[in-house]
Image (cartoon, rainbow over all chains, first blue to last red; front, side):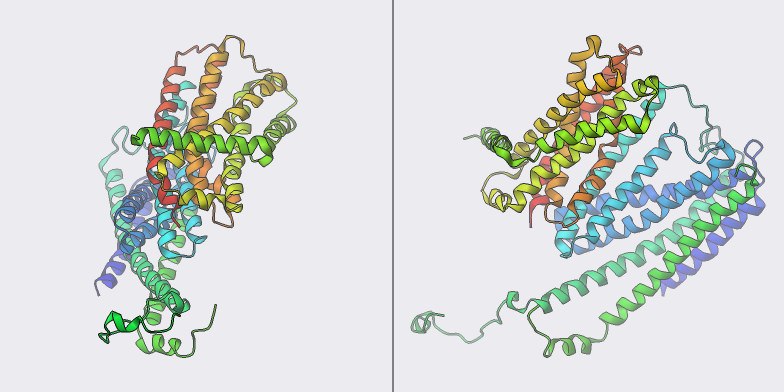
Length: 251
Length: 56
Length: 229
C-alpha cells in the first residue's frame, strides 16, 4: 500500500541524508565535525514544533466539533512530538559539549523553550494516561494542549528579553547554519535531513493516527459491552397505542 | 569528558536518535498490526457478547 | 440582571464563600502559609551560608517559595471542596461557568497574595533583601504574579479534581506554563530592588499584565469544559 511505499522511502531518505551529513559534507571551519550534529538537531526541533502546532490545532478542533478524529490527530502529534523534542534536546547537548564545553546553557532561548516544550508534552501525555473515558480524556488533553500552545511563544520571548539583561551571549548560537548564511553544501545537508525526517515524520503521524482511531473504537466498543444497563433499550417496533399502556402495572 | 573526540559526540547524537526513532516506528507498526487484527474478525465481537454481560 | 452583573455577583459570592470557609477552619491555604515559610528557610540550608550569594538569589528564592506553596494552596482550594461533594453542587447551579471561574480565581489571588505578603518580609529578614523605596513596586509585582498564577492554576486545578494523581499532576502541568511568569516576576523584583538601573522593570510588568490577561481569557473560556464530567 501507499504506507509501505512511504515507510520504505522514509528509511531510504533518512539513510541517505545521514550519510550525506556524516561523510560527504565537509566539516565546519570553526566548529569542526561537531557541527554535523546541527543537521539532525535543527531537523528534530523543526518537526517537534510542527507536531506541537498540529496538536494545538487538533485540540481546538476537538473542543469545537468533538470529532474523534481530532483527538487522534492531537495524540499522534503529541507522541511523535515528544520523540522529536527529546531528540532535539539530546542533539543540542551533544553539540554543546564539544562546542561550548558544556552540555547546557541558559542564554539560548531555544534550549530553554525546547526543554519546557518537553515538559508540556509530557504533562499532556500524562493527563491522557490518567483518564479512562475517551471523550473526557480528549477534552482534558485539549485544554492542556491549548494552554501549552499559548505558553510557548510567551516563554520564547521572555527568555530572549531575559538574556538581554545579562552580558551579551558569549556562547555561539546553534543557528550558525543560517546566521551568517552558510556555504551551499551545509544548507543542502540541512534541507536533505529535514526532508528525509519529514517523510519519516509523516509515516509516523499517519500510523499513530490510525492506531489511535482503532484504539478509540475498541475502547468505545468495550465500554458499551461493559455497561449494558446504560445502553438504550431496544426500540419497540410494535405500534401500541399509548392509552392501552396506561393499564399496565407501574414498574 | 572534554577529551573525547568530537566525532564521539556526533556518533552519540545520531546513534541514539536514529535508534529511538527506529524503535518507536517499529513498535508503532506492530501495535497497528495487532489493533487491526483485534478489530477485524467480526466473530470476536459476537463471541464476547454471549454470556459476558456480568456486572463489572 | 445584566450578564456582567450576574458574573460579578456570582464570582463575589463564590469568593466570599471560600474566604468564610477558610476562616472557619477549612485550612486549605493557611496550612500552606507555614509551608511557604519553611521552604524559604530550608533554601538557606541548601544555598548558604555565603550571605552575598543568598542576597543575589533572594528574589528567586522568594518567588520559588511562593510558587511551590501556591501550587499546593490552589490545589487544596479545589480538592477539599470536591472531596466534600460541594463542588459538584456548585457545578450544578445554572450560572455561567466563567463566573464560577472568576470566583475561584479571586480566591486563588487572595491566597497567593497572602503567601506573598508572608514571604516578602521573611525574605527581607533571612536573605538581606533590601526593599528600600521599592515596596509599592514589589506589591504590584506580587499582585500581578498572583493573578497570572491563579488564572492558570485555577483552570488546571479544576481540570484535575477527579484524577487520583492530582497532587502530582497539578504541579507537573502548572510549573511549565508559569515559567515565563516566574521569570518575569523574579526579574522585575530584582530590578526593583536594584532601583531599576536599566529602566526595564516596566517592560517586565507589561509582560506580566499581558500574561495575566491572556490566561484569564483562556481560563474563562475553557473552565466550563474542564469541569464537564
